[in-house]
Length: 407
Figure (tube, one colour):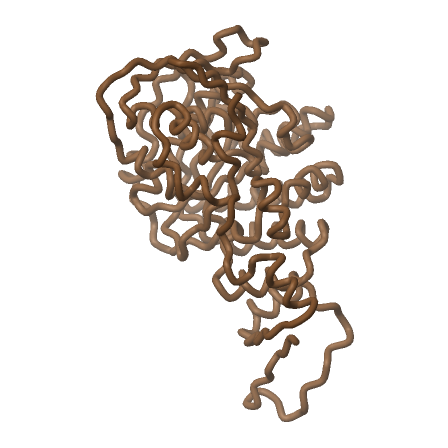
């Protein structure tokens, strides 16, 4: 049974059932945000199953989350792969496969784990594999294995994206390695406090790859312009039927889906507070259209509204596969450094997704020229993220195990 108590201080009429609109996730979340209505849930029958099915009372548990709890437990190269699988990836697609040899790890792309028209040139996919590669290197060093990385060892069209040869050495711990298990994308609100410029500089460090840079957008006017561009890109992506469908395909709305697939986007990863998260898990899943509307609203009222600063990784040759892999390694280092300093990071790539979609379809470019106005001359964007001090801690996303992604 679901009851919605009415505060007698606010009304003198008896409570009447609302027969106008169905009670779905989007409507109830709006009510929670607007009126602070208290929801009391006590269930049997179908509602009890819904509690079980969505793991509403015990989120973030089960086999799908075990890799976060045991990533330090396994020694050697398999253990290093266990750290690699915790890296960031687009839509949590985890598009990697690893081949473990006695003294090396080969890194491959799992071509079936793409996002279709959202990433038509597979740029984000290769950036995600670069993120995993960085975790792999850090984990090898911490385990006393000295890694040597060769990108595209078989050439640009070859099967291997990277080869990591290792030799025995002295363990090299680092704050970045120690942050691997705590690094999560934070889609929740950020505090109003600015992140100091010196801290932003420390997050980025130095890139040894020519033309690969991190640009910080902190001043109010350009930050507001980028916020508008991010909202417009979210609106345009949702209005594109194919992109909307490819985007929604990676949403996992039920615990059985999460435990079966061990990937994708979940309610737990949306940055909700505890009450809103629990209630949203109890209600029927939103449709794709409702999900799009919710994402656009969150982009406008939470993501961009609370961003302390934006980071943009740019490259002189953004279509170069090696550059994309290096950009992923740089992005993962930034995210790990942010985590170690208590700074939240949220990947926001809808602008470059629209740039690539316009390029794929041959329409006149609109987002590319607008983004170029906010960047140094000649700098081409690969990816965008926002940073800030978090209001609440981000939850982990489901992950496939190291053994399931090795061959």
